[in-house]
Image (cartoon, rainbow, N blue to C red; front, side):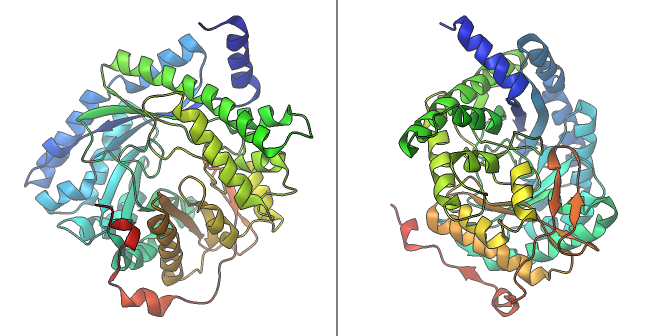
Length: 452
């Protein structure tokens, strides 16, 4: 039974502590849209998306009004488009145009799935789609792209890592007049999941049903407020318990929204992703949670340990609040989207190498990091390979979303606006991995992959 104090607590969380549902994301299978003629396939895609997602945005807005719970984004994810491109041939960018047109028609913020899964090699359509990503993102507003280059079971496809370094650079160059935003819509994964509701990495996995509704919750401000109310002498066991209880409350709200949206849309409920997704708003920062735990500044000694505790407590609390937990589920550390991370990077407390260490214990990886515009493609590929190795060895999802700031010197800032915030141009090592990257081939799967 919900009592009055719980209702008032939730209202306070929404009004004062930035509690929201970050996204409701409808996943749609496009496998039945495949055709040997690409134009026919694109028309089928447009028709199916418009039919299945016609009511997604209106229903989300209804729930917001009736329950008073902000739903920040309404999004779509689709079957990795490289699978359809392998059937049809032709210019894959035509698919991106069809996705963008459908997303605009139904009114969603973003559509993810201009994607390829190449952890074990390139199949028909994969390389063509990956090489088209910069063009496709330059010519669309809502389309997001992801490529999975590695997994614990398969190892790391270093030919794909090398290719993605070049793709990210080209995407930034093509959109240099638009804050290099093309690169901000590309994620390179290891161990990508099929039911991620968050952009830019969402796609509808081939093991999913025809249509599913996935929910991504947030609430760093709520966790920080709960910790700030604790006695100064509370030990870390009590801190972890407080985080766990707060994550439970946040996830229950996401479960409520997802269940109600599923019922109204007549679409099966997928998962609740209980990630702490920050924003540039003051008080809505994962970095500030870590500092509330007791760090002088995020990025200093103790940061990785504090983040590990936070991530674990979020998972333990959230998993008890929903029977359908999935996606990425943990604490995100996107630099440009987190006010505390931005401040830490500005003052030099946080560097790319420390962020890489933090990704070993948190959700996903190097996210929304602005790097110098003259960073060579091979260096970007080396960063991708390093992050993929962390995911491969630790059997976790890791990712890279870096933005080369074309024409902006190190130390200055790249401004995106909105939820994407702004990011200081962070230095990267000038020692080159070009010879290693050029070798190509496959980094073999680790011994822990042999689980059968």
